[in-house]
Image 1 (cartoon, rainbow, N blue to C red):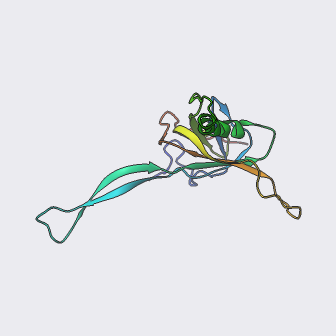
Image 2: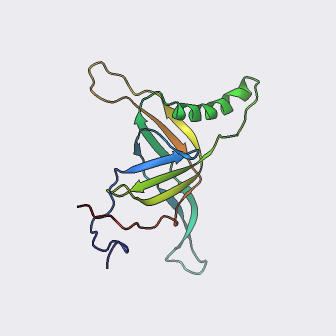
Image 3: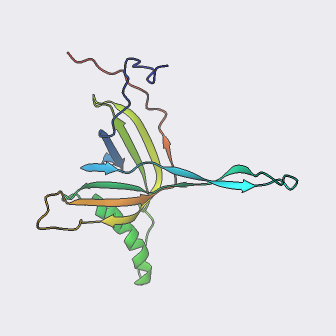
Amino acid sequence: MAQFSVNPERLDPYKNFKFRIRWDGRDVAGVSKISALKRTTEVVKHRDGGDFSSSRKSPGRTEYEAITVERGVTHDPDFEAWARKVWNYAAKPLAGGESSLKDFRKDIRIQVYNEAGQLVLAYNVFRCWVSEYQALPELDGNGNAVAIEYIKFENEGWERDAQVQEPTEPSFP
């Protein structure tokens, strides 16, 4: 059975290095890494009163793992601005000020592309907010690496966008 309905001659699964992340209706600049989308459902064990030897299992609460996004440090303030909204929300009431939940949460879109640059998968991630922000990595005068900033955001679930269908892959001469 073919793994790809539109391109049955394709044997290779999609690669993990062509992707984009979008929020506020635009692409986020320079993202080099996005952690996995993962959900876990708790197992609830129970036993019938008359059954002494075995238990049954049912699905319980589902949790969605936080997502980490990394990129090289630039002058783009998007990560810091979003992270600051969480800090301002927590800090302002303590200082006697007011706070707002406007734009505190964002819906995120993660898009995956094939080698030809065609959109092949998209996931919508709902009600995200920043739980951790790193502005700069450890700096090392003897190092030889790119300075990476990252945000970690909590979410309340995600789903695959069923509107994104497998494209017909082009044939290049």
